[in-house]
Each structure stands twice: as structure tokens, then as C-alpha cells.
Image: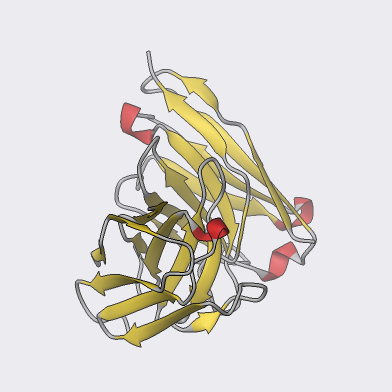
Amino acid sequence: EVQLVESGGGLVKPGGSLRLSCAASGFTFSSYSMNWVRQAPGKGLEWVSSISSSSSYIYYADSVKGRFTISRDNAKNSLYLQMNSLRAEDTAVYYCAREGAKSPSDYWGQGTLVTVSS
Amino acid sequence: AIRMTQSPSSFSASTGDRVTITCRASQGISSYLAWYQQKPGKAPKLLIYAASTLQSGVPSRFSGSGSGTDFTLTISCLQSEDFATYYCQQYYSYSWTFGQGTKVEIK
């Protein structure tokens, strides 16, 4: 069974940093691209970043480019999102999701809440 | 970035109804269109990808159609568990973008 479990969310002050993790199991992690998608409270979904299976290709939304860094450790079956210079508008539930063979996100984690507030 | 516009933003329907949600892209995206269902407090669930391919395990009452700029999600016979918010997403080019969502409520 495919499982994705996010962790690392919490309360952080504006300008602060946070590192999210996503532990994957139930599939060959090193064979799949992975994504981060976020959802602000009461709002819609926003794609944040994607990374290819070998980390060769990385993409970011303009809203986080230069502040967030996506990475992965295939030996540890883990996906990461380093978030720096956090702003109030980064407050959201952050989901990690697996990119399917022909679909953008076929499995999702339960999400982790990041709150940026003084 | 490609803008995705869903309509309507919300509506009320009854169990057994046939419902259709539309999604329009600001430029052509071929068939690189996915649909998700999200219930309160839960992660989104993939329903359809490649505009019309049903994800494994998704009931056949869900169907998708369209290509280019105009797409539809149809639920042929609405069930109680289908009351949720639905999102379309283009993955034709980065940055991937979602529609604003369509909330289907009980009449």
C-alpha cells in the first residue's frame, strides 16, 4: 500500500525557516517524481514544487522560487521541502504527492500545517 | 502561467442527479488535465487524468471529457459520498495550476 507521511509543520515567525519531510513507503520511491502542493486555510490547491526521480529536474511556483528548496533522498525514501524567508501568505497545509506514470499526483499524504505568524 | 477557470463555483444538487462541472484553460493544454475530489479535512483524491482516463478504483459514474481548452467532469448519478469540492488541474506545462474549485452541496 502506498503511504506518504508528512512531518515538520508548525508555527514559525515571519522571516523564519522550516523543513518539511515526507516519508514514502509501499512503492519504489526512486522511480517516481514527487510534488509538493499546498492549501491555505479555506482556499484552493496550489502547486508548489516538483522533483524528478533522480533530482535532475526541479520546478518551483513563482510564489516560492528563491525561498523554497525541494530535495529528496532515495536511500531514505524521503522527500523534503526547505522553506526560508517565510511569509504570512505561506500559511497552509502542505501535501506531498507522488507523480503517477501518466498523472500529476496519484497518491497524497495527509498534509502538515505550516503557520507563519508573529 | 496557464489559468484554469471552473464553473460553477458551487451549486446544490440532489442524490441521483446528473451533474456537470466545467473547466476552461487560458490556453491549449491538449489532454493534460486531471480532476480531483476533496472532502473537508482530507487530502485530494485523483479521479481522472489525461482528461478522460478514470483512475483505478474510482466509480464509473465519474467521467471526464474535453481537450484543448474546454473540459468537463460529469457525475452520472450523484451519490451521498460525492458531496465534496472538485478541482481541475493542468499539467501541460510548469507551473502546474489548479482551478479554484467547485463545491457540490446537498439540496
